[in-house]
Amino acid sequence: MKTLEHLLSPITIRSLTIPNRLVMPPMGTALGNDDNTVSEANLAYIKRRAQGGAGLIITEITEVHPLGSASPRCIGVWDDKFIPGLSRLADVVHAQGSKIAMQLHHTGRENYLLQKKNKAIGPSAIPSYIFGFLGTPREMTLDEVEETIAAFGNAAARAKKAGFDAVELHGAHGYLLMQFLSAHSNQRTDQYGGDFRGRARFMIECLKEARKQVGPDFPMSIRISGEECIKNGYTISDMQTIIPDLVAAGADIINVSFGTHGSPAVNIDTPNPSAPVEYEPGFKAFLAGKIKEVTKVPVISVGRYVDPYAMDEVIARGDADMIAVARQHLADPDFLKNAREGHPEDTLECLACNQGCIERLSLEALPIRCAINPQTGQELMYPAAPAAISRKVWVVGGGPAGLTAAFEAARLGHQVTLFEQESQTGGNVRYAAKAPHKEVYGRYIKTLTAKCKKKGVDIKTGTEVTEAMIE
Image (tube, rainbow, N blue to C red; front, top):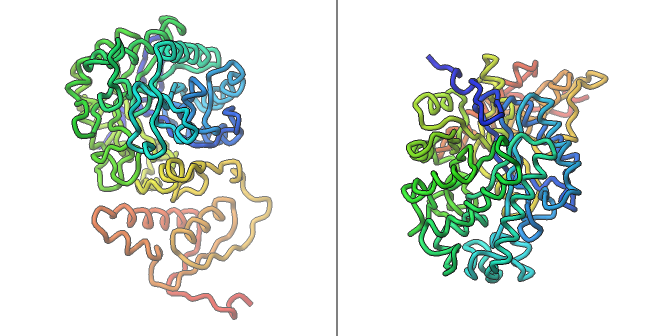
């Protein structure tokens, strides 16, 4: 019998009790203000995600240093001036009953804007796989290394002061901490280079400094890529050897992701480790299981999870203690709530298309959106309350756009009729669903159609709208 017993159970980490095992991990949004402060759009976006009921919300990348800021619209934490806005962010999440952690981040060489200005830095003067066409980063001096370690510590202290429940250091996906860890980007000959353990020193010292700044009782997580997913990259066996050192340095949680910028084994289409639809949900759960073999602290698994019942099974069999679900929170933030309340069939499943999220952010430098959820990133535009006057609304066309428009109109209390000239809804998406690995597109149309009917939309198929009908 399917159960949510494990996923919905609380977990205590140091002084913090998290109400359930679902984690919304960091996802860049580019919704911040142009001065790196928290915007109203940030607040509305994270509030809507928290309303879904995840026990722990981890912020998008929050920059610890100006030379590590990916975009003017990323959130900053390198100065006390950011604390008021960050406090509002924490308050919004707490008001929904969730806990919130801040992810501390530095781009290192993976910085398009600084590469263009020839100001990017890294462990060694080695070009990025993604942005190398723009130039070569400058190798960090020892003074800069020490300054950056201090920046992570100071940022952690600001997060605590702002009312956050925990911090997470971003040591995955090819950013600065991982750049030091990887032989592909670190060829230093000083104490921060050498073998795998030597290359791990920077990550360990950042953790130690953060722990020093926040004290003994404040929870800290480290996000790692369990394996590099690149030719001659480090493996999960390599990573297992330094986990005890990360825990000793202050990590209370190991958040196990995978891959780096440019990992063809992760996603050949985009530079980010966000698996497309060809990958089965939970396909990297074994990495978290391997980390659990060498530590007793809680371990988080990630990897295209969409089904809460499948997440529960991963925890039940011991591969992970918590489950991180990213893009499904964009497609339908109510997926856990729907399952808990007994109607999981109402959840719109993430298509793993990467179009509104990863591609907009990474390739177009535009704010986050979702191909199947028009509210994502535009929460301020969408009214929550019913319309003051209920009107009769006709929607012509039963493809995904028409179905979505009909559902939104019905959600606001209007009397909606949808006309589709073909015998069934879905438009061209029905044909896309016939391609290999694209069955999710068919489920999307089926679910969206059912949601419309449940909201009272009168769907008339086989009906072509004419001018006479309108008159």
